[in-house]
Length: 140
Ligand code: ATP
Ligand code: MG
Image (cartoon, rainbow, N blue to C red; front, side):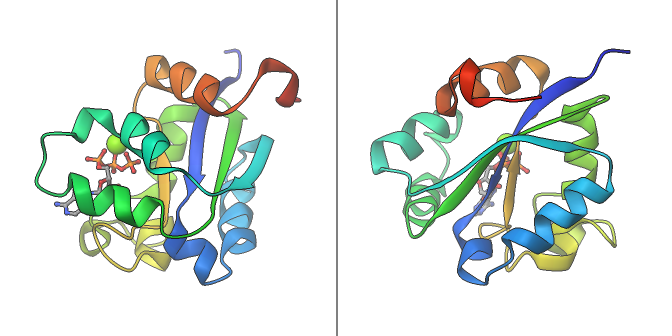
């Protein structure tokens, strides 16, 4: 099967605790390749658009505040079944329910400050990748 791609975000709780390299090591050890990466601070508008699917949820305002509270590292991961594989490595949204050894079980602080984002379908991966990266910025 051809390799596919997914969008990953190392969230502000993780960059604040200097965990970018530790999380990247877990991703790379799983066989995923980081084929694009940049550190930036999301604007409120960017965070609202990125998480627009959750606009009606009670946690939306807090989520936008959290995602804009510090730097994030946005990255494109490439590998076999990249979306599914990254979701498996991330673990459940709530770190208390995440399987042992997953990124969220190891590093997340709470259901909100859960260290990483990963696209949840190939379709969403494509739109999320183009939200942050031009084709020339992705070097496989
Ligand atoms: P992500 O989209 O960030 O990869 P996910 O797909 O596991 O996470 P979603 O249901 O899409 O989870 O929720 C998006 C984000 O919103 C979560 O990662 C978390 O930061 C926050 N969130 C989700 N549920 C809650 C909640 N009940 N309370 C507070 N924050 C939440
Ligand atoms: Mg999600």
